[in-house]
Image (cartoon, rainbow, N blue to C red; front, side, top):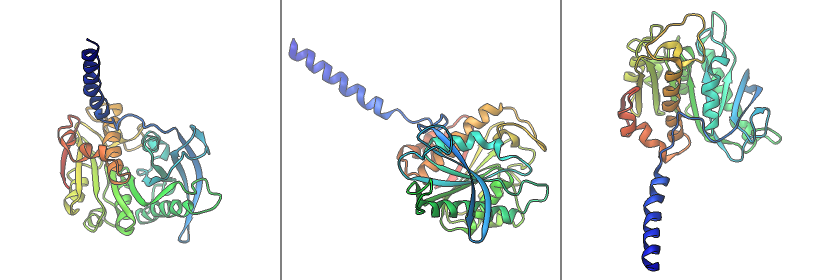
Length: 298
């Protein structure tokens, strides 16, 4: 009887352990890192760019020590005439999953330069790469200098496309409701080498998917994706509405949760080498997502 009991216990343990280990991560929930931020001036290539950096930390707060390890870096661009604070939940979410996110606070007026904004995003990334090797820097030995991403919303999404087209060191891009820019983000998309993902809202009336993100997606060579939030709206990618905003048939909370899940899994797979994220980028969970339609070529 004792032998039988031991055998049954071992079988139960064997059956339970793989199931526990196989539990997939939910990239829509906050990651495991506390998040801190630091306001900086990124200086590189003759440019001086004020920015806020959100990063994985030992404790939440301002100017806290960076968590142990090196982390991929992402530059995030705000939308037209929108405060960078409207994207805090997205950028802190990325940081909680192990990314250093630099957010330039430039080009916030009524006459922004899209080209300069793209250069500002690249300046932020270049500065972070340099900080990894700068003695005494908060980010010394904390940046994965070969894993750089670009992101942003609306105008900032278009500028992210321009930035990636100009910077071969950018290895992945994902945008929210990317807008056509001057110079053309659609034309720049055709030259992109890095994997690119374009997130859209099906009810966006400001940068409609058929006029903005779809042409960028069509122009881009693989690897590429167009992911559309069903019922999503342009300002649903922000934490709160502002000027020039619209509405959709999903709540802001639901849209942000879906967008963060898609955005984070993309960068976790392409920048962080997270094998568990692949299914949520290219597998059945991505292709059958009830909230976000899938179109893409790996």
